[in-house]
Image (cartoon, rainbow, N blue to C red; front, side, top):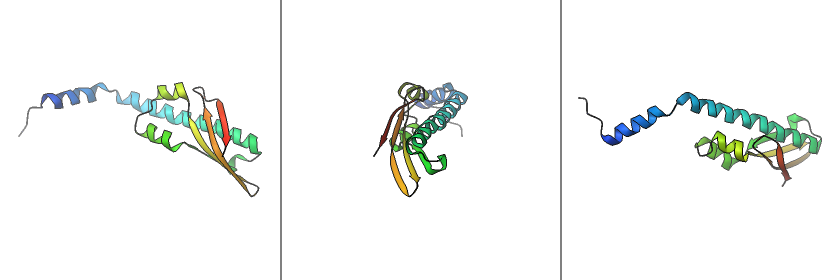
Length: 115
């Protein structure tokens, strides 16, 4: 038996249909590309700072930031305005160092700190 949609259901359906899914997927791809490129900028900075090979360096998006991206709370426009923050870790020559690296909206390293 078919039921006539309520006003609330109809409004949700119209809202869902108004969001262009390819545009959201395109933004997700651009966000992932920026994470990769800007993370590499932090990795290069760590390699330069510690004289370590790239294989000795691990870089990841900060956990809180990653949660915001995954939840859709941080958009591509936010990332382009505020940049990204990464955690880095270097293990080389029997020594270990870790810290964080911030980038601006163009992917330039603006802060590099060892903890």
